[in-house]
Length: 130
Image 1 (spheres, rainbow, N blue to C red):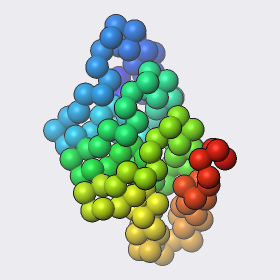
Image 2 (tube, rainbow, N blue to C red):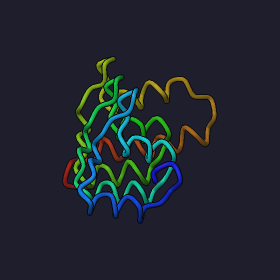
Image 3 (tube, rainbow, N blue to C red):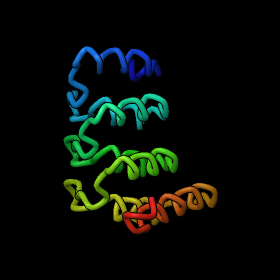
């Protein structure tokens, strides 16, 4: 349902009490997969289902880390509004902001840097400004 971008199936699974925090071989949850696949509607449905937004994969990355890696400004904003913890560290000891800064330090493409600067502003905003 996540890969095929079927939010209505996710809703049906949630109503049937399916476990939406389940993790695959690399520790990814359906939320990680939806974020990675840019499935905005599925991300919205999953976050509305009150899943653990801060579940970490085998690398310690949350869905927020994943959204940052992929430069998904809309998803970062959504996750922060839903209460994702922007202070959790991955196995490299990086918060989402530190992870973002590492990625930005390696980029050459100006449009990608601008995109990630918008994400950076979201992470730097006080909690009440989301």
